[in-house]
Image 1 (cartoon, one colour):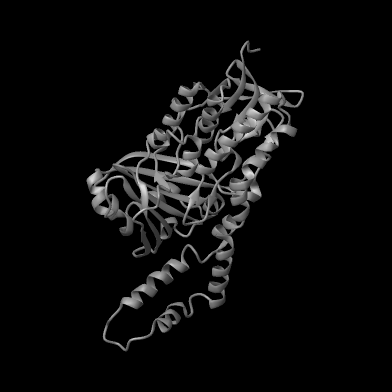
Image 2 (image 1 turned 90 degrees about the horizontal axis):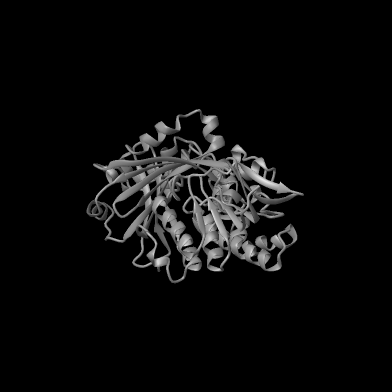
Length: 427
């Protein structure tokens, strides 16, 4: 039995966990954060884009000090075939600091440091083996031979929330509800990145790809510019990948050699390689978010929305950490930690996080089940653009005729219209 009792123990020092710890510590609460990484951020991986409104909400005066990489002012959506690509390239003079690329090892370490400065206690390098449960209420954690008690435990342990799962508080992760992300971080000088992406220091690009990058498997690729590196990665639906029997590491390696992307990373040095589970089941797969003495936040709760052209998770994780802390404060003030008071956590999430997940409840199914997206449409797009630009001395055709020529015999027009309609309603 532990001689020390905390008001709140948080499992995980990622974005959600540190946001909750910072908010609680600012309110003068006794907070302990336990993380299995050797340091906060050491085990955390993401594609690398943060929508900063959430960071500003967490710390209005200090957010600008965060180790952000580049403000995203150029958005590129790319369809890829084995040899070609078609891209929609959008450049914005100003986006009012809407989003930045980030490297999680740096960002998470900084957030944890801010939480510590506010008064939270951080214990890295420790694995939580289980929860203390008394009379149906979570009453602390077990780590090694030690038991640490708390009035409330917040799980922010990531996509594979094994502690909550072993305690029977959430169901096991299902293959259909997760994706796998593989990322390379490639070192390049700031000057070369600026030149290749036609940008200036502090500004950068986000590239989202579909088609050949995933070899027909449901998924896509991403490229983000950092200050002096590029994050290039692949995300595939786990069920689709399993059915394909394709070697994921080899596909990710081939991605670096595709002519549409190789020119951006040529001459760079690989400095990091990582992989990560991503919860993409969406609203339909959300677990119970609270129990007696317990709250679930961030990726552990499945707060991710993938719309193909944007992937949001870190901002939702941060908002859920804030909401969990506010709910904990309410419970501490009342001296009650039952479901009846902790259910206000769900209400706090409703307006933005849960509302968004409900709105895009069909996005995951559309992305994983629309069969033409990953092979047919990229090839049609490339062939159409080739036909539009082709001048070989033969009689010219109107664009409408070129569209018919490109599509004819390859995909039914009804399928195209159906996919467009479903996409508009799902994404």
